[in-house]
Length: 268
Image (tube, rainbow, N blue to C red):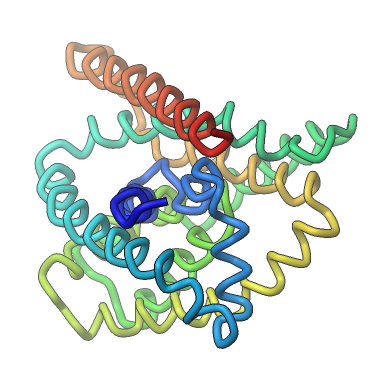
C-alpha cells in the first residue's frame, strides 16, 4: 500500500480521534489496521524500524487531521453548538452497524444484549452524576484527566473520547485551550494521553484476545450512552430543531456509508 493511502488513513483516524461521535480506534478497525497498530506499539523497539513505511505516513496524516479539524471545529462550536451536537449524535448512530459487526466478528452469545443494555444504563447514570458545564475554565488537573479519556478513546475502539468529553462538559474549554496554544493545558493533556496509552495497550490486546465479544459489547454500550449524553435538552420544537434533526440524519447516513466503504476496502 502506498504512502498516500496510509497518509489518508491517518488523516481520517486523526479526525476521528477528535470529532465527537467518531472513534479513532473504530476508524482503524474499519481500515483493517487496528490490530497491526496495537502489535507495533506493544513491541515498538523490534518492529518500529521495519514498519516505518507504515508508521510515518500514518502519523503525519493523523497529526494533520487532528490539527486541521480542531481549528475548524472550534469555530463551528462557538457559532453553532446546538446543531453540531445533533450532527455528531447522528454520526455516532451511523457507526452502529460497523461497531456491531466488529463486536460479533468472533461469534455471538445470547447474553451480549444484556451487557450492552447494562453498560449503557450504568454509563448514562454516571454521566448524570458527574456531568456539568465548566464554561471557559479548565485546570491542568482536569486537562490531565481529559488526556487520559482521549487515550482510552484512541486505544479502545467504539469509544468516542470527544463525545465523552462533551457529555462531561470538558470538550469546549479543552478545545479552546488547544487552539489558543495554552501549553499549561496542552502539556498535562498530552501526559495524560501518553500514560493512558502506555497502560492500556497490552491490557487491551489481552482482553480482546480472551473476551472479545464481552469487551466489544461493553464498548458498544458506552457508545450508545454517549449519544444520549451529547444531545442537548429540547425545550421547544421550532425551525432550529428540524434543521438539527436533518443534520443528525445526514450525519448518520454519511458515517454509515463511509464505514461500509471502508470495511469493503479493508477486505479487498
